Amino acid sequence: MKKTTKMWALLLCGALIAPGLASANPEEKPAPAAETVTAEAPAVEKEKTGWEKFLEKLPKISGYLQSGWNYTSNANSSTSSFQAKRLRLLLDGKVGEKVDFRLQIEAFNGISGSTNGNGQKNLQVMDAFATWKIVPEFKVRVGQFYTPLGYENYDISPATLETVDFSNIVYRMACRNPYEYNLVDYGRDLGIMFIGDAFDSGKGFSYLHYDVAITNGSIPCKDDSNQSKDIYVSLTVRPFKYFNIKGTYNWGEYKSVELAGGKGVGSGSYNPMNRFVIGAWYDNPKGLNLRAEYGHMKSAVGGVDVVKENGAYVLAGWHLGKFLPIVRWDMYEDCVNTGTANNYNRILLGCTYQIFKNMKLQVNYGHFMYSGDAKDALGYDSSEQLQIMGMFKF
Image 1 (cartoon, rainbow, N blue to C red):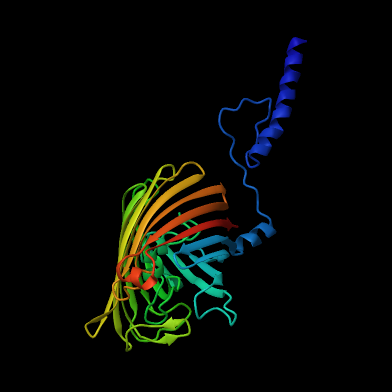
Image 2: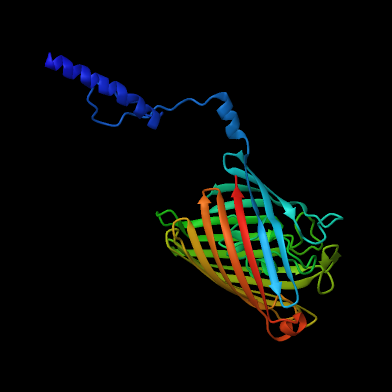
């Protein structure tokens, strides 16, 4: 009788436990209660339905909104405004087994000359490129893409940036063609780029990454205005996990034209301009985040500098669970237009709070310091900025 009672108790326990095992991992078949299991049962693959197969072939839709409040103040004036800084829509799909495609649209493009008659922001094609991933060491990208000049324009997006805004290395160097627009153009260009990762460490990263691009050297979504092409050569060396060193050089020749967004500099169709950015970055997702970059951009026409600018920043932060407090020093120097607000030193204090996976809150306070010609032209020697922005991804 006792043996029968024990047997029924064992069978009852097995019956109660089995549904729990099945719900925890639906692809793993539970063993019968009366059998002794000596090894893990093989997983049973569930055949995909026609609807699931159809959905897999559709492009993946994602995007993000960055919106919040911005306050600026100096000795002469102050502004306070709610802002929608960015609204991006991305479509990522597969053209073939080794060919991917990306389309990215910016819905709050505020570049001068591209707004409507009321000064309202409009749509802009950011990315439209295909990448043929032949092997990890050699990939080919064609279309309109972000150029590899610096970390912030290539390795970081607004969705992953530690601060609300990029440094002026991005806004003035990587994202600006001073000959055809002279304002931010998002660091995009039309062309072809060769990409590769070599010397696999066996620890989840490669020791060397390279990018070689040939582009129009014009503003996005526009044909080249001369026969010369831009050339970018970029190398990233990662000696160990979490740390890398990057250097990028860009050579180009540009035609000086005047568009609705702004008047270009120089004259003629083949004005030379060279840019380079070098930097180092250590980022431990559970500890220190430390990054520094220096950039230089120069063009001389007839022996006279029409563009000569320098920029640098050092950013330090520490990952504390959902919090990332940071401090950043950055500077910019326009050696030609010395009396503008682009000549500054700035100290920025900020913190990012990752509320949950697809939502974060950023608070940044920046103190700008001006001297020399900039101070005299502006009429003040400092200004303040406070930004409170939310990033919402989907």
